[in-house]
Image (cartoon, rainbow, N blue to C red; front, top):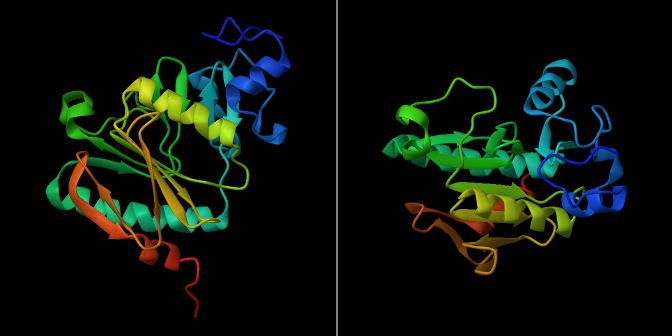
Length: 217
């Protein structure tokens, strides 16, 4: 197997899966061969197959997403985008908003906020996969995500310069708020989630968020 780009310690399939956080094998693409994939492949796979992939160590990793997770992502994105637009703070992206947060490292939060200060020329970029680091990265946990994968993503986010990470867990109906790899607090349906120093004044009820899972006609 080719050695993954930027990861000289990856010599075996086991090493590779550890780096990726041991996701389900059906999400790890073998074309192009692991260790050889590039940003161009991320764009081409999406264009040709409609598949959304992250790029980690030269490996294409298909994004995990389900119906419930998508619904919650839309709810959060609507709330976030309304606040961001009202105050003209920057841009909001959804679950197909891929970003090259470091050279040859593409991550795709389910929802993200990027301030104008982090955008080249304080304008929206025209690149298919912009080289920017969001201030806030939001992940909606899916059954296809593993604890190891989320740990790896958090590490990548904070090393790249992300300020705040939210992990929303629909199954347990809780949110983990990470200010760093070690500074974490857990919120439940009784709490309100706020933007802290990243988005002062932005907040919403988690009871309202998770209530979306129970809404019916």
